[in-house]
Length: 298
Image (tube, rainbow, N blue to C red):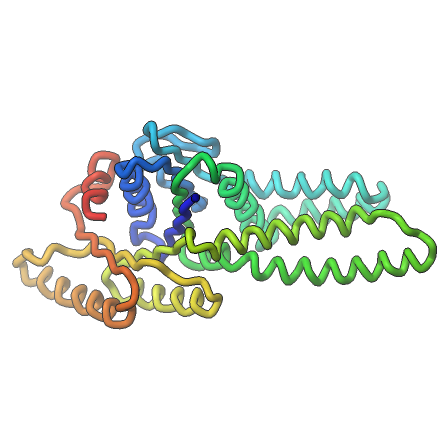
């Protein structure tokens, strides 16, 4: 069965590096893996050393990658809505609807909804192709919205369905008994998000938070943990990245190391029930070659 992992955390903590390394780790275990970037500022191409793009790209025999373009997906999402409405609304109504759809391309939430549709499509269509699917997400807030989106949209669509059912019932009372394409479409969308919720809540789906051993990333991790716990979305692992090696003797770095170790100790004390992975800072820039040094630490 498909294993799905989401990697999130504050910007700049190394989510792309860690998710890419974990993808290579799974290929070493012989598992066919798909690495997906949902961050508009894509960088898995830089880490992997191969231009990826918005189509599935073979990196190694066991590793494929894709960088989802939120702008492109939002346009496809709106165009699909327009096609659906063209078949059920009159030309007069469509003129006003098209104005709203043009505005919707830049409205808050459109990118998240379209991005989520693409993620679910990948998980559903390719569940028999890959053993593991890893999502490298944008900074924390974006990740949290994506993971809790199904709950919000299911409730929203349920409300729309109830209102539409009242209209259908009134039509039936007037003798207009016929299939309602709008109601049918609303139910399809609701069922899609019900499936998405089941996928995300599955025991085979896990969330991995990445942080640096500093106070600000720690505070953001705490907030993310609370948000996910409140949403009943458990976290599987906290990865503490870019830890300074303990054998540095310069006074400046010794003090920095002391502060880092205090943060690490706090993480272990608060989240003792979680897997805590520690990754030490490398003495070179991250690229396709140095990535494999991280793989060895996972």
